Length: 217
Image (cartoon, rainbow, N blue to C red):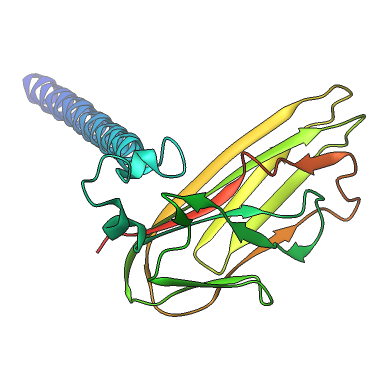
């Protein structure tokens, strides 16, 4: 009888140890999972903060000022590394977007380190390097507009998708997209793509939309 009791106690002890081991394993597993989630959240949060700061530092407040051109003692020096173009056509359609330069500091907004070809509607960097490139798309609804996605793609380096919702009033939708990329002397063209049902009564704002590029290094 005493031997049987001892066996029961041993089995009970083993069972208790197993339960405790399972609890410890579960606790350790949960702790590792929580730590992983916390580290991932911190990493993602850090990336978002860095991206936001980077955006604040690099995305232009206007076509020129935020890149520091107006503050430079030698704006002509920076202008050679900078190009800015405004769109010519306001209609939204499947097409290679046409652009034109603007006047700034008594000169053209296309610096000497770039070449714009109106016939090809292309902008060509003449130096290989790291470039900051952005596109500002402002679209207005004139009357009873349908929903859709307007896509503008610059070469294979920058894609900007503008979500447009159905609207019956005059509404402006703005989207700014940017990237930092290694570029060579390839021709850069901006391809506009619209849905199959088109985007009638939506129009591109020619004054506030634009394409900018700046040589970083």
